[in-house]
Length: 337
Image (cartoon, rainbow, N blue to C red; front, side, top):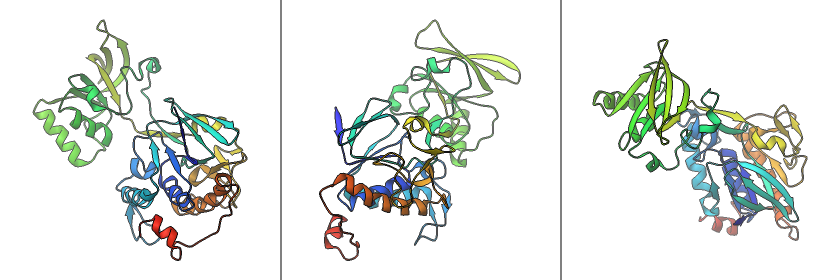
């Protein structure tokens, strides 16, 4: 089934979220696509508790607080989110674009707005030769439905927040083993304390080492994981492996869209923030132009100007009359004030 909207925004970080607001003021509907399993981009994924000091009217705000406030701000416009997926391909059609994601979602829109930060966040993979054959079968880098792991033997790899949080959570209904190269962690102290307590109670197992190889077992539901512990190779049989080694950023399929690029950034004009392809825009850290500053504040400005140009594609027969939210009763009604 093909879904339809006015604009598809690629990236659900702060700049992508604010773009929903600016477009919504012009009666332009939005769908957002993001590779992560939640909105907020870098702010929510990499530094949810880190203070940000250069957001206007806020002396300090955390990444998660900023995300939450933006979600509240755009709620009147009812955007639709497509998470845990990335745009795989785009196709020009008569009145816009057909956008298809890597899980088969197809959306028709009049414009595309790329607000993907420095690119798509993708998980750091296990550095073993046959990893592609195991992914989405025995190896998963994110959890969409935790009940899938109930009553299974799980090996979680990593020492950060995701690894520790999921170790603690999945231990409620699964046999969980955590593997990390040392018994020191970068996760929140509370999560680490909970994990140690679970280990003490025998509710989880801990292995000090690094995964070296994975092979299929005679039991088709299991794999044999070989790991190195102080120079000694050992094996463990599990149903699933969950590596949480953090994220890296890649331009991904966007690199093949025929856009004018400069060192993996997308060139835009500074009047409309349109790319070299008509009706495709780029805002935020993903774009490049003379004098560019990689600030959330700059991305907000770019979103406002982009929305004005999108109006021309979405409503070619209408004239856009600029109005301030403080003086327009119609805009205030949209915002519920």
